[in-house]
Length: 294
Length: 298
Image (tube, rainbow over the protein chains, first blue to last red):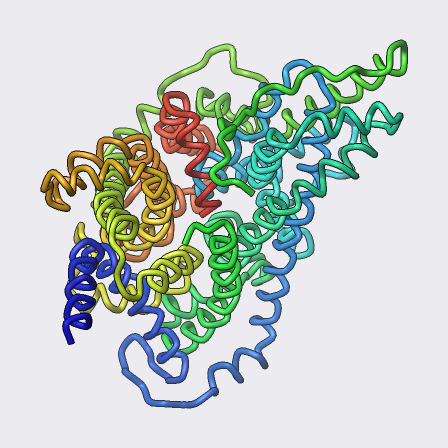
């Protein structure tokens, strides 16, 4: 009895410190999460509460060609993850091979990560326009045949978006890898070098395995970005066009909710994105546990 | 991996120069290394370079692309977007959103992180795991019920809606960042204070907060950057024209005004939207980088 009362008292004291923060998270994140799952099972619209329709919304999405195109586009943007990791591995290898001015290069490569996606997207709206700097550069370099309407050709546009996502992502990935590389024991690298192994072999066999954890971290962050944060790119660069060729799931959700007022259907799209987010959540909890941060 | 990495200043200690093979092979290798990095750095900087030089072009003379700085630069575009396209008001709105959301998130996170580190109570581990899991939930997943909720509360197009939403979405990250810092503070300090009869509140105010100041600064700064950069929340919750933020303004103006004549104007507007970040980065590079690395892109 007494122990239980003491435990309750302890819990109450803890609650005092946590309550304000957790209440706000509850209101802004937890409550909407419950609601989005609930609404995904109804035919709710902005104007009508709607009624329970079971899995109809999911069925409708899965048989909708636009849903699959959006999903495929998310997968295409996901390519920025392996690509940025591959490029960052090479950059880190070159930086650590020993050359002057490494810091300056790293700073230059990091710069794209700082501005907002919205700012960057407007810059690329100009850079990639038909008569814009990129095509001018190509023509000036005698590669005019490569010049094209980067954002207005239905076959090219999503790849252009991928280019912009990748451009913004590389610096961040380089930063993660070099930060980890700095804590790898140099004597190991040097010992391997003494054995006569070339730098790239040493790097691959000694340093890269030591970076496995941080590469996984970069991959997980990249995964959630490709399935959660493509909205600002798409809404500014292409508005889903031309001819709805660059819809992603986030943009589809936005259009369903705010243009077509189909709350139930938009919620079902959100639940798909939630599943991706939960996979990342599980990873973050797992790795925080491993590092004894919990 | 150790986290946050101490060397994450954007720039780890420069690697000690390795011994390269001497002679022409070594020289060739160095040239190739520099060539590769210069090419990559150029790709990273060129878009921002063309943005800057276009922003100083005279709109009337602009013909679609400028690769070299104009010989007759003008500040006219900055003046026009600032005074005529409403970027002055948008700048203030972005600042209000960013600073108040960051202040709320940091203040509430400080209390919660203190509770998580200094108190042992039932369900603590589970709650903390919940906080970490919530870090992975993006705004787009909750935006549908959130917009309905704010409508029901009558808060759409009023200041608290986007500020509270932004703060709530940033909080899990802020709690986690402060928790990882506060748990490293020596517990002897708190135990000694406890013996002296100091209340929890005094321990919080006089020991935890002063010692955690660097982490508080990082949390505030990075939260402010995220809120400054966000598009979705203010786009949905602050639809009234007098509440337009810079990012929303760019998203609305950009695609509709991308015509040749307007490029210099737009680029001036984008430059304004990036400027405060550049200042923050110049002043507090280590804190910015460390926090951004922990939070990821959003």
